[in-house]
Image (cartoon, rainbow, N blue to C red; front, side, top):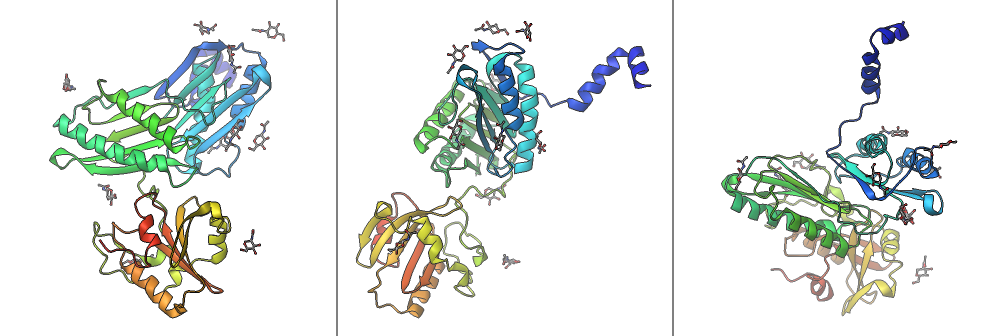
Length: 388
Ligand SMILES: *[C@@H]1O[C@H](CO)[C@@H](O)[C@H](O)[C@H]1NC(C)=O
Ligand SMILES: *[C@@H]1O[C@H](CO)[C@@H](O)[C@H](O)[C@H]1NC(C)=O
Ligand SMILES: *[C@@H]1O[C@H](CO)[C@@H](O)[C@H](O)[C@H]1NC(C)=O
Ligand SMILES: *[C@@H]1O[C@H](CO)[C@@H](O)[C@H](O)[C@H]1NC(C)=O
Ligand SMILES: *[C@@H]1O[C@H](CO)[C@@H](O)[C@H](O)[C@H]1NC(C)=O
Ligand SMILES: *[C@@H]1O[C@H](CO)[C@@H](O)[C@H](O)[C@H]1NC(C)=O
Ligand SMILES: *[C@@H]1O[C@H](CO)[C@@H](O)[C@H](O)[C@H]1NC(C)=O
Ligand SMILES: *[C@@H]1O[C@H](CO)[C@@H](O)[C@H](O)[C@H]1NC(C)=O
Ligand SMILES: *[C@@H]1O[C@H](CO)[C@@H](O)[C@H](O)[C@H]1NC(C)=O
Ligand SMILES: *[C@@H]1O[C@H](CO)[C@@H](O)[C@H](O)[C@H]1NC(C)=O
């Protein structure tokens, strides 16, 4: 029945095929023609197929970065898949699944290619890609319409992107280098932006890549437009005047024990912060011990009269500073807890944020958000930081 219909209407065949296998068109794509081509039945092609069909098979990956290679010697193929930082794992895999089917079709015999959508990007090559900063090709996508008061709009956008850049580059984990946020532009327009690097880059490489990306926009025709994107293999950014990302994906360091239920008031001390009990702030000694490699000397940031401060990393990737009060400290447990409560109430934007404490077997620890330069003195001198 179907075959006779197809004989009568051969074009229907095409339609049927495209309906069942269609991937949306790429938003950007590039087939590199100067790095060699493969032939249809080559080993390279077979390796590429194996690699791609297996790329998203590790379903334990929930941070949106896939890295893999397959094959030997000159037929070895490398691939990297990156999802936007706010995209959920299933949507990420589904997006990459589309790129995996479509990219070898749009670049039918190029060894190296890159393409993507809003939510994800795929690259493959006969050269290693992991940990290598690559800024070309660079894709520029603009919204096509100018912002009102473009100069002030550009200024506000640039400031927003720069603040996001340092947040993304320093990343609070090695798994994701992503930051998103908003700012107010001229005429109370809200500007929304995100920046992202592949997480295999170092902080410096991520910064360098984004600096290059920002400079690509200068002198381009998307400067002054209401929305724009620069996409490079190793990093990208995007800004729009409507929200295009999921703000519930927290790009700030993950909050401390969740139940402190505070409402931020733009840098003021939270008057209404209620801490019913200290339990929510109490952390387990074992966790902190693991996070600081058992308080190893190499993690020691400094030593003050009260004890030492260590750098650490929680299993979720968050960096912390741990103040370990010396055992000789005569402060009683109750006094210590009261002090923690006081500190927790004094959360202020100029202070290092207290994430919690630990009180176990004579050990007294204060756990703070890690902030590279700014705040080490606070931690080293005095338990209650200088109140600014
Ligand atoms: C990639 O393929 C091109 C063309 O075949 C070749 O010149 C180049 O050396 C290959 N690169 C690697 C790392 O094998
Ligand atoms: C690869 O193929 C493209 C056409 O598909 C051709 O333009 C290009 O010159 C080829 N590159 C090499 C290195 O042979
Ligand atoms: C593909 O392989 C067959 C033999 O398996 C060979 O005859 C043919 O030439 C090859 N085609 C190409 C394009 O290499
Ligand atoms: C496919 O991926 C799985 C999980 O990532 C891995 O264990 C397996 O070796 C891969 N298979 C091939 C053929 O690469
Ligand atoms: C990424 O892939 C490269 C090449 O296969 C490998 O050397 C590296 O260990 C991988 N890294 C991760 C984090 O999987
Ligand atoms: C992606 O493709 C793999 C392999 O074909 C499949 O197992 C998986 O279910 C797909 N994932 C999604 C979210 O479509
Ligand atoms: C945007 O502004 C530029 C100059 O600032 C102008 O050349 C261009 O025509 C404007 N585009 C639109 C769509 O108004
Ligand atoms: C802008 O970002 C802040 C957090 O920095 C958020 O509270 C606010 O809701 C955002 N504004 C909009 C319009 O999404
Ligand atoms: C936080 O406080 C609000 C209002 O005080 C309340 O509705 C909400 O349930 C609280 N959330 C948690 C997680 O305790
Ligand atoms: C951590 O250090 C203590 C002594 O400071 C030692 O007894 C313990 O075995 C160490 N644990 C690990 C996992 O190294």
